[in-house]
Length: 453
Image 1: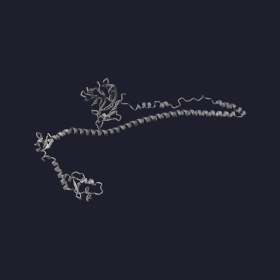
Image 2: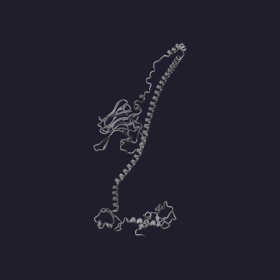
Image 3: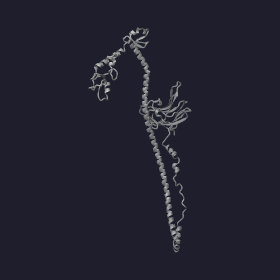
Image 4: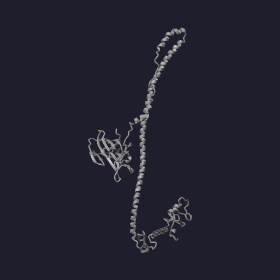
């Protein structure tokens, strides 16, 4: 044995204490895993130390060496719990030096007047202290892991949003392409019909002129032939020739046909504007575009972002824009000044709320949502705001089309029944926050926004 026992108990490949040692026929020992790694890819299996060829690919365990290694590791672990000065067990902990010591060290001059605790008590106290120190780090780690998971979910949802939005863009442009193709065909057809009509008129006129030219040419040719005849013959036929010439009436000179040419202005004049004007029959402006990033996971928005209904709950990433009110969605554009109006078709929906939502700042600096809305639920129509108690409104007949009028500067928010043109309710408030159109529903019947017409 050498002066350092661990040198004799170390594998010459990994230079560490043997783990599951095996012995070769040449009597050299190695860790089983180290030997298999050494032999991997080699043609011959030889001893890494003496290069002697091994007769076995699966050498036997060296049990004696394994026992020696285990005993050495146990002795090493035990010696770590002994005082290096007195070889006594470390049973107490010096609070002043913050180190474990033996009972002899406690009575030594270096620890005179120090405070001590049993090792197990000191270890428990320090474990608790370390746990307290670790708690903020563990909480931070958990928060970071949650944020990373949310980030991964958000990345997947961004990709899904992009794919769905691209599909809807292509569908909308396909509709516009179809409309433009129909307009193109109609314009070209109108041009071809005018060409056919005016070409027919001109062909008839040309044919009539051709017939008249042929008749006059025949008369002139016959008269010119008589002019070349002998005198006696000419004189005998003179009267008949004159009669035939005079029988051919001379009509007025032909005049150009008015409007014979293609009316190019009709087909090309303000062509793009006229098509755009026609497009307004199928394309409408909506002053309230619903923002899907603010919608509750239980809501389903239409592809044109103009209607919303209740549906199956979806798994959505957390984002700060999403409204804190359940089953609700906001308009995409904030209203901070001026007058604004829009209409909402609730149809047969039996559970809805309409209004505006704004974020105000409390005196302490914390944000507070402010909501002004009318609500229909269980057959009752009510009005509510943060500054007014909930009030039941008279309801003579079901309301299906509601007009919303907001005057931010004058502080007025009005709702009216558009079918009867009667006022439902008016809120008055000095609005200080930017307001967003607000819709709530827990009914599968869509609620649709559109422009006041």
